[in-house]
Structures are given as C-alpha cells and as structure tokens.
Image (cartoon, rainbow, N blue to C red; front, top):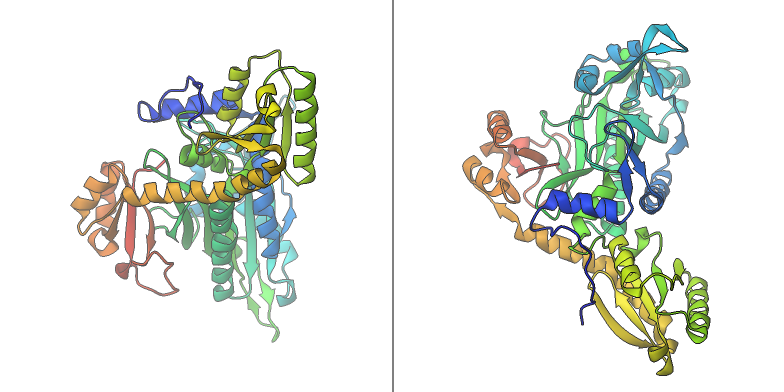
Length: 473
C-alpha cells in the first residue's frame, strides 16, 4: 500500500530542472553561496559526501595511492608551461593579482586542477627508478569560472579528489589509469551509489586538456541526459618533459616517467538525486544515507516513547545508523514527508495502536510501501530492506537506461535517437566531422567502447568501436 502525504515538489515529468532545484532545497542538501556560482553544502548533503568520499578513499588506498595536500594558489607561470593544458583551462581560471592591499609581483591562479603544481614537486621527488611508482591523491576544493552554475553539477567552487601518479613505463601507467577507472570509480558508482555506468574513452575532442587518453564513467540521469561521473587520464610524458622530471634507470640512463591523473567530485551527489530521485524527493542507497533508519514516534505517549527508544537502541546495536524522531510537537504527516524528501531508506513508525498488537509500521522509501511488522521481526525486516534497496534502485536505473538506448547505424539516426536518450553508433559512421554535426545538435560522444560495451585495448583502432551519443550536463 502506498504511503500518504505530498511533497509539494515540481513533478519530474513536468519540469525536471525545477524538480532538481526543489529537491536540493527541500531535502536541505545545499544552498547558493554569497558569491555567484558558489555553494553551501548543508549537513545532510555533506553527510552524503562524507560517505561517498570514504568509499572512494578506501578504494584509492587499496590501489596503493597515499593522500597528500598541495597549495590552493599556483604561480600563473606554472600554468603557462604546458600549452595544451592551459589552453583547455584558460576560460575557467580565477587569477589573483592583489594581496594585502598591494599588487602582487606575479599573478597567482586559484587551482582549477593541480597537474602543474604537483608536477613541480614530482620533479623534485623523482630521481631514481626506486622512486617509482609515485602514487598520490589529494582531497581538496577547486575553483573554475562557471557560466551556468547549478548546485552540485556545475559550481564555481566544488569538492573533489584528484590523483596523480608517475610510472616507469607507458604500459604500467595505462594499467594504473584503468585500475582507477574500474576498481575505484566504476565499483563505487555501481556497488555503493547503485548507479549503472558505461565505461570507455573520450574522443580527441572531448578528452582532458593535456592528456593523451581520457577514460570515463558515464551514466544516464532520470531525464535521459548523460552525466560524466569520473575520469582517469593517461598523461603520457607531456608534463614530465615540461617540468624536467627524469629518473635514472638501473643502467644509469635517464628517462621521463609516464603519468596519470584522475578525479571525481561532489557532482556525484547531483547524480544520486537525478538517477534515483522521484516525485517525493531523494531515494538514497543505504550505504550513502547519513541515516539508514528513522524511528518516528507517532505521538507523545509514555509507552510509545519507551518502545521507540528501545527500538532505536536495538537497531544501533545491530550496526544501523539510526535517528530517533521524537518531535511530537510537529505534526506526524509533516515529519514523514520531510524524511521522505531526504531519502532515508527505512522509516519505523511507532504508535500506540500498532504497539497494542505487538507491531510497528515499516516504510520502505524506494518503493513507497508500508507494512505492519511484528516487534520481534523488526531487525530482520530492516536488514532485508537495506540489503535489497541498492540492488533494486540499480536495476530500476539500468532498465531505464536500456529502454532509452537505441542501436543506430548512421549519424542521422544517432542524432534522432540522441535527442531523447543514448544512441550507440559505429564510430566509423561519425568521425571528427560527425562530431561537429553532433555539437550543432547539442549532442556529444560520451565515450567510445567495443560493441559489447567493454574497454578498448592498447593500440585498438577507434574505427572498430562504438560511439555512445547523447545530450549531457
């Protein structure tokens, strides 16, 4: 039986962008900052980010990278060293020219990404083959000029992690970039965030400035648009040559290391909203919910309070993240709607009528169903709900993506299909000229992959691959 109550959100089908803004505001995820394009991440939104970051950090460390920190301010001269890199970021740079009331001797850039400053230090730290591989990751903020800001998706300042590595061989660097793509990003997004992804590499037009190859995870949102979820770049030896980074091999010969960089950001919170949200708000997979279970007192009654406190304690001892909502001075309906908006996976409603029969009411957020559950069975029922919620959300998102994906045999067919979802079309039918036509239709090639959806091997011709085409955020 469906739950009662209304969220007062704009319907997704009516106006998806407005619905998104409503959810961000009503679920208390974030607010606009005082400077255009900045954002304040509220405690509920930051709690989601903490859990996402922890899941990523665990996998990054398992891949051998260690966390470090590099400065927010970068000498502008560093950015000028790598021509392709600075050309790619020039329109987005924030440049500081004054400090302490005086003009600076040389301008400094607020980091848009940290390739240049990190490579400055790599050149100091790498001398011998024994110093390789060098694997570092940074959790930080970055700042980029944004013409059309949208909370979490595109903001002037956002939070992220960026990894940077140096290796002795090209093959080792490529293998590590792919390990990050699959073992860190794909695994976190699919297994933890419950969002299905497509993996592949970017075209030359779409790849990261300064990279020789960009690998990407792409997902379809609830409006059938694509969102880039995380990228891993092979940088070749470009930055090593610019910054003079060399290592001596076992025979004493000098070589430039091969490098990678990779990153994922608070954009993933936007993905959670758009991939799983419904007309009633967020639907969070349990692993990312700051609170997995809310125990909700229906009214202020001594027996109800005693039972609610006991149930909350039992659920905590069972390892669940629990919140006891005993705000009986606020209407029960309003509180129910608020927790539904926030996407808490399970809600346990404790009222005197159910207690008299030895029951409580268990509400499943992602299905919007409620059922009476015997007190003695509650821990098992909540455990079952949390065990299956992520899989069911993932299956629903996958079914949506498959229903909105068309196999096309020509560029024209891909343009038609890409207007309302994804089109898979042979890259040989697109090419660089076709990409320009796609751009004229506000479409992009999200990634190139084999016809079976797997990643291309080193040296494999793009002409044998399939292009995934769609509109993107």
